[in-house]
Amino acid sequence: MSTVTFPGLGLTFEMNRVAFSIGSFHVYWYGVIIAIGFVLAAAFCCWQSRHFGLKPDDILDLVLFAGPGGIIGARLYYIIFNPDLYRNADGSLNLKACLSIHSGGLAIYGGIIAGTLIAYLVARYKKIPFPALADLCAFGLLIGQIAGRWGNFVNAEAYGSETTLPWRMGIQGTVDGVQRYMEVHPTFLYESLWNLVGFCLLLWVLHKGLRKFDGMMFLLYVAWYGFGRGLIEGLRTDSLYFFSTGIRTSQMVGFVSCAVAVILLVWNLRRHPDPQNLYVNRINKNGEETK
Image (cartoon, rainbow, N blue to C red; front, side, top):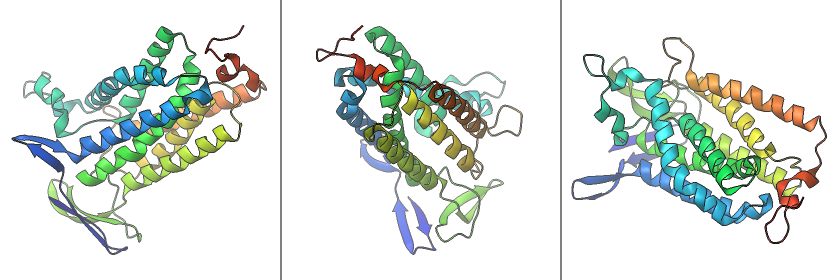
């Protein structure tokens, strides 16, 4: 049990990481919240699939592989950039520690990379355009990230540096190995709200008919999320660093991916793409692509 406060807002929350237990087996709120976000993302993508020329079955097939694949990718990413936590005294890899996901250690960018690769393979297998599938998945990723950050809130983690701003969050944090009360930036909230705004913007672009080419929504997502994550990561106190450098890995990946996405967006839009070439406009009522 931990206490999280927002002293400037007069709010106090008593947080228990465990949602419920079955004997000695504990189910944590973090996992429950991640699962809820995953279900909501899948449901939304199935609902909106027709706007991309896809079928709900395409999304369900992807979900079967993207769920476990994303978790594996998120774990591998965290281990790669934080290897010292998973070594034995002799320097060898501690496989048991690597597999202990319940103890924490998942990085969202690893999940995104793995999920994108799986989506590409599923698109190839089902013979549907990967850019169209990626556009739809952008919404699912944002929903999952909006929800997932609240798992960090329950765990009182993923917070920023100390601040006196009115919306500061009070927690028992650890500084130089010493636990003490501190008031910090609620960076979990910043990222959740940033993603919520991004989700609304992408939805507006879609339903205003501003989508010009397959892949546009995914590039907008990468640019939006990458820029926001780069800014927010600069406030974090638990960043993964790029090996032995002082560069924050997620900040670097965020800004670089944002720049690449913006370049690709501008390059494609300067070619004046015809929306009639969107996959959704190239298939007939039977779901077959017209030539």
